[in-house]
Length: 301
Ligand SMILES: Nc1ncnc2c1ncn2[C@@H]1O[C@H](COP(=O)(O)OP(=O)(O)OP(=O)(O)O)[C@@H](O)[C@H]1O
Ligand SMILES: [Mg+2]
Image (cartoon, rainbow, N blue to C red; front, side, top):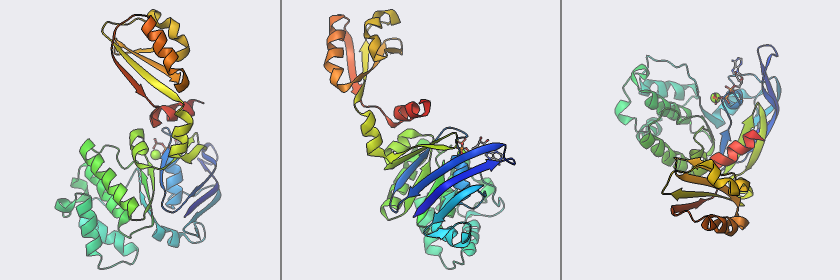
């Protein structure tokens, strides 16, 4: 569906290497998270796919069409929700969506537009000018704009940045439905719980290089041999009390909570050590690592 092969990108006449030999294939029906720190190269990659930035090396194929030779065809297949946008502020939502449809030679798509506005909670705002929308409304408008030509792949560059919590969850539901109805989705986000919840594949780029690309379940499984143990005590804690647990990375949080990381097979040993200490604890929580922790560890490596 989408094939990126040995793509590199250098800005400023060779001074700034933003992507280094990135290869990535996205298959039909996948819901992929594209993760990475600020400046990792995510938007650069997305802008290349959108045809807004010209790569310095490599090839990109979208729906079987080569981006360099057949850009117009690739645009029909892909819908992009950009991170930064310059758009026509004086237009209303309705006008902007009709204009966007026009680019694709689509007329009489009132039903599609109505449907999108409804699903993105923008119906009431359809006659408002873009410049008068709030930041969160603009992001939703951009999603409608990316979908107006019913693309097979939707790529979203931080669509939930600055969107309130309730609306974020509404957007998740929208994306899940869109995915279920057959759209392939690539989502860039800094909210890792979002990626963990929605996506089935995790791609991480760091310093312009691909450092992980795995089905989410595999990635989580690799790290699930470890447990995170949180013990709550009545009294305040000091580090020196827990030197005997040094092998388990003890960390004191919120004054009276102890955080430990241990291989699952050593859980009973840890509990035994804790109980021998004879400090009464009020709560005990054992969790598996979250995507956020796994991500941080991969980035540090
Ligand atoms: N137009 C440009 N000219 C020069 N350098 C650029 C340009 N756009 C991006 N860069 C540089 O390329 C690198 C990658 O930037 P990019 O915007 O792709 O990162 P990102 O992963 O999207 O980050 P963020 O999470 O902050 O959005 C950065 O070092 C950035 O400074
Ligand atoms: Mg970006």
